[in-house]
View 1 (spheres, rainbow, N blue to C red):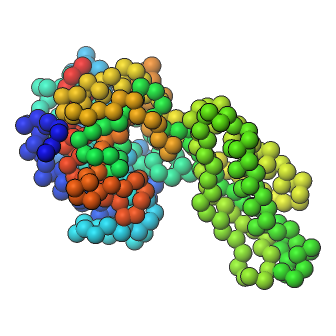
View 2: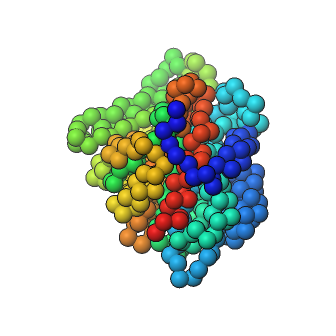
View 3: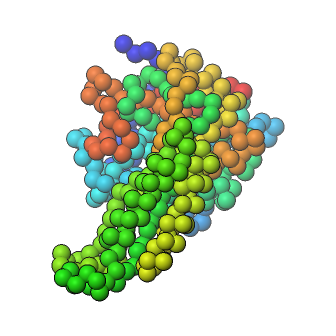
Length: 390
């Protein structure tokens, strides 16, 4: 039994929403090169009557529907990029791009936006705001600026409040998670390059072992989390990739490692990043040449007014609204957009996209990644309610 209620006027878009998501699911693209995806969304928004604003040299764009110059403007963000991993789902709409998959569900985010955009364009008399939909490139890869670039290009200029959602297939369809504070972590991706001196494996004293130095640095970073940060403020250090060496009987002169750091307050974020500098300095004293590049996002912090607007807009749709959810330890560059609007009046919520009955109960970035299409109209309804109620 469904424990959510959709407007009868929106239900006619159910087949449309499924067709759109299934098509988008077939064409996932990496951060910053979402050419097919962007063109598909752009043409559809144009067909609805929206004015398209492009960002020369980038795939991101925004689309405006202006009703009355006296009205305020509300904006909705939809991220477009996929993940560089194979699509292991067993569906007839699998990815046709090698080693690319929508395993974070951004296909659903775009679909919710496109569905809501179509409805609002077909019912302009119901709008209480001028509307902007922001189709953002490059949310996944912290090394490729996405939201930050679009903010610099003017995507939130003239915007009074802004909203976004993120699907969560570990939650049962018919619910949302939201709070009036921190929704995602301060996070950064780091890339470490270590240059040593190569040597034969039988004469290690003649070289400087880049592998050993990378291991030392990783151990030191673990130590920083364990002993230098407040135990009551969560912090996470992770190394997900190490590349180095070509043969088993030689000490490599170069190794690269990549990973992430996460924290739940700005002070801890600063401690972690400052620690990287001191650890690199020690490597120099040991005779290694190192380079650490660290790029990341500030935390998403929901504005209390915008949070309440989400709760009010969802209350007529859902019977299950978790208003005090814990923040995710993952990071979201939507924070740049919230921070750029007046009074930081914006908010993010998690839209449940799982279904135990259908065997859908997976976490973001898992493989295979499934989500329940029933979430699409729910998300669209919440966006519609936000735009049609001041």
